[in-house]
Amino acid sequence: MAPKYTLHYFDVTALGEPIRFLFAYGNIKWEDIRYDDDQFEKVKSKMPFGQMPVLHVDDKIYAQSTAISRYLAKQVGLSGKDDLENLLIDQAVDLFHDFRQKIGDWFYDPIPASKAAKVAQLKDHFPFYLNKFEQIVKENNGFLVNGKLTWADVFFVAPLNYFKYINKRDFLEGYPLLQELVKKVESTPAIASYIAKRPPGGRPGA
Amino acid sequence: MAPKYTLHYFDVTALGEPIRFLFAYGNIKWEDIRYDDDQFEKVKSKMPFGQMPVLHVDDKIYAQSTAISRYLAKQVGLSGKDDLENLLIDQAVDLFHDFRQKIGDWFYDPIPASKAAKVAQLKDHFPFYLNKFEQIVKENNGFLVNGKLTWADVFFVAPLNYFKYINKRDFLEGYPLLQELVKKVESTPAIASYIAKRPPGGRPGA
Image 1 (tube, rainbow over the protein chains, first blue to last red):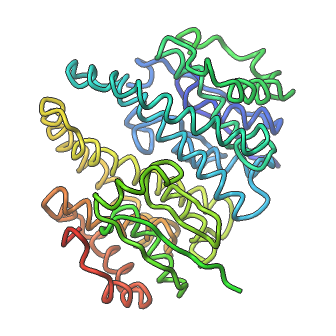
Image 2: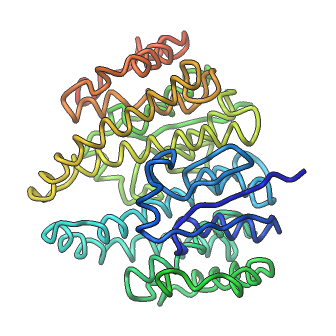
């Protein structure tokens, strides 16, 4: 019997959305429990590391969005064909983390002086990372790894809405290959079907 | 013929050391090129993502310490026995990243007001993460995953010197199971043999 999957995450895309995309891609049923900030505060201490996403697989609990995504990718056939292809996938995923952490460090910084300094740095970080990704997609025939859809593409595309939302702009403007990558992932039939039905999110557009 | 491996990293332990431990553990020969800050500035633009560690495998170049470590772990037999065990390993590795990023965010913050605020937060972060890890090791019979050595243990132990060095204290005091884990990894014969011969580091103790 297939395991029973329950995903616990905020009612936004962000780090939960790659997991939802992977479930959708694999036509795997999952319960999609969405929290607002107040609801999360009440259950935070029960989460393994005080964070979400958290995935229940039957009666076992797992945390960490990347670890969960890598596991599900393997189940739905979006891993690499061998160890070196998995290294390329992991490398792209970790570069995406470096990028999104720069955005998050700025957005969640509670100290005005420090936040202002980070806005200035972001002006360099955006072109640095986006040029790298654009170049990687150019060298890999329209995908992040070896000219075919892997979970690196899903992991890059799925949370983007949220990062655009907190930046209040579409930072992919001027990066045509990355824009095409978004379209490719989001128009994959099973993923497109999920997107058409997904809730609008607690913070619309996020 | 075995591939030719060349590792490029700073002359410290930190994020390069798990890779060196894994090579040592697998009795794999590698060229260990070590940079000081000035030497790195000269080659930075040639590194794929402007960062190190970088690993050459024959004529191919790979970046990202975690991605490289996961790949090498597979080659030397320190991966999980199945997908769910790999999920547990990845989960522990990602929790370690959350922890070390809190330390790094503080240490490398150039803004005094922000840095002071982070020192205060670190007083909570240290017990939070170290208690989690101590508990995980307790539940897993002395290791991070399923009572046996995996690359999660190596990834936790290898860079610790550096984080102790920048904190100027042994933050594992009061965490006996984590201290034992360090001893277990560092006394693994092939790793112990590497440690006995390794360079003292550009910043001794780091």
